[in-house]
View 1 (cartoon, rainbow, N blue to C red):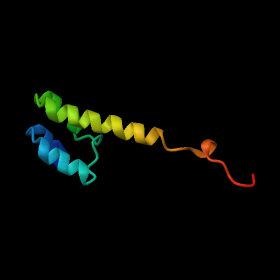
View 2 (cartoon, rainbow, N blue to C red):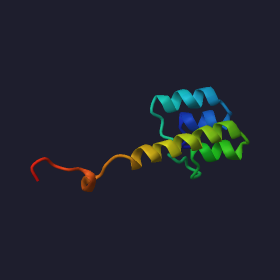
View 3 (cartoon, rainbow, N blue to C red):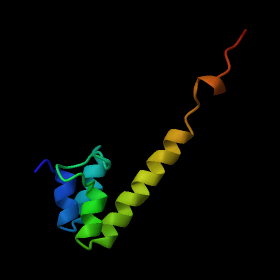
Length: 79
């Protein structure tokens, strides 16, 4: 209950579908009614390749987010 298409792909070990869903913007950190993310579902069900793909995607997303300059890092011309 409360599972997304990515949760289902993860629970079936469907790496290609997981990649397609993520490429189309599926959220990898959303939790289902049991509090599981797609990655934790893949780990629980023994689909290491799917779990590693989702883990890598999450890490890359965090790296992209941390490289976006915040207000303190932006210089304003003439200030």
